[in-house]
Structure formats: C-alpha cells, structure tokens
Image 1 (cartoon, helix red, strand yellow):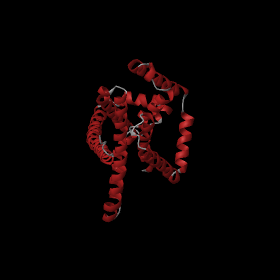
Image 2 (cartoon, one colour):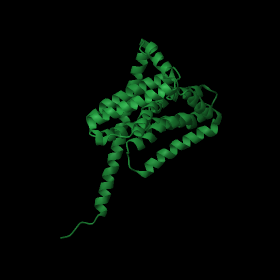
Image 3 (spheres, helix red, strand yellow):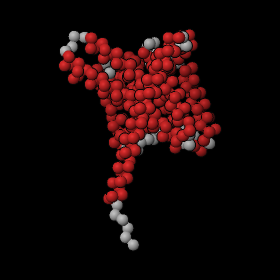
Image 4 (spheres, one colour):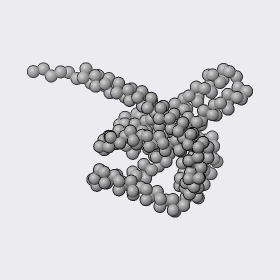
Length: 264
C-alpha cells in the first residue's frame, strides 16, 4: 500500500517543480515529505523488492527507448516553441520531467482499483470491529490521498497552462489525460505493466496494446474507467478549488482588516 501511495504522490511532487504551483512552502514540503516517507516505508518493509526492481529497470533499459524518449522531448519542445515563441521555451530537463510526470500520473487514479484488496481482507477471518474501525478507514484514507494527488496534479497543470496563455486547451488536456490514465490503469491492473515498462519493454507494451486493447471487453472497461475518473475528478476539483478560493478570500479580508486606512 505504501508503494502504491508513493507512486501516486510522485506526479504531484513533480508537478510542484514543473508547474511552480502552489507557492506555499508548507504544502511543498508536506508533499515532498509524505512522498519520501512512503518510499522509505516501502524500503524498510520490502528492501530486497525495491533493490531488485531498480536493478531490473537499469539492466533492461535499451538505448533505442532512451532515443525515443529524447525524440519525444525534442518534439514537445518544438511544439512549445511554435506556440509560445522561442523565448518562453523550457529546458530539456523540464521536458524530460514532464514525460516522467505523464508516465507516472496513471498511478494516482490507479489507487481506486486497490479497493479489491479491501474486499479480499474483508473476506478473511477478521472481526467486524477490526474491519469497521481499521481496515475500511485505512483504505479510505489511502484511496482519498492517492486520488486527491491526481486532482491537485491536474489543477497545477491547468494553472500553468493558463499562465502560459493556453487556458482554452485545459479542458481538452484534462480529457486526454483521463483517457491516457484509463489506458494506464488497464495496462497495470489487467496486464500487470508498470510505468517503467515504457522504458524497459516498450515494444512489448505497444504490441500487446495493438493486438488486444481495442477488443470489445477492454474498450468497455476503458469507457467505464474513464467515466469514473472524470466524474470523481471534476467533483473533487470543484471542492478543492472552492476551498482554495475561500482561503484566498479569507486571507484578503484579513489583510484588509489588519491594514490601517490612510487618513487625509
């Protein structure tokens, strides 16, 4: 559970660097600290698993995949230069970070599917009190934090796009990302692929997608997944933005109250 939550928080932590929003140091350090804590917690619990996974990724990285990632980065940079002008273009490292952000973003809404583990735990011989007071609240907090990380990541992206003069494309970008996340969740839950498999076995992922993803059953699951992600996202986005606006209004009111008026 801690590992999945780390993967869900990672895109949010990246979004703070990529999109420079919000500016609250407390929020920034809170996200980074929680992300680091989840990684350390996973390492302390499964040190050999993490070490073997990292070594496997490093051993299976192919030069051709790195070239593909570099080409994608350069293409995205070219598109930005055409749209915004040369003076507003980002660095190569920023675009590489953005590619990583998109690749790992499906891990945030993916936590919704971990509810199946709650069902498995409930079927075990646990007492009703343990299920009610420990297991269910634990999963609710886990799923809530993971999906809220997804909401905040896209809000940060949307704010950045508005600052770059691309506000009219925010809704289209959100729908595209919901679609990509639905595909990513299917790849992870049913075919057991991970985000780093886009680097270590890209050809296998693409071949399986071309051969099986557009069958009737996967398409139906993708449509349902998209609807669930989009529905929950826009509900929580409305709640989150309402809270942010309310806090901003409160801060402005407090500032105006504490500032003495000038007397002529």
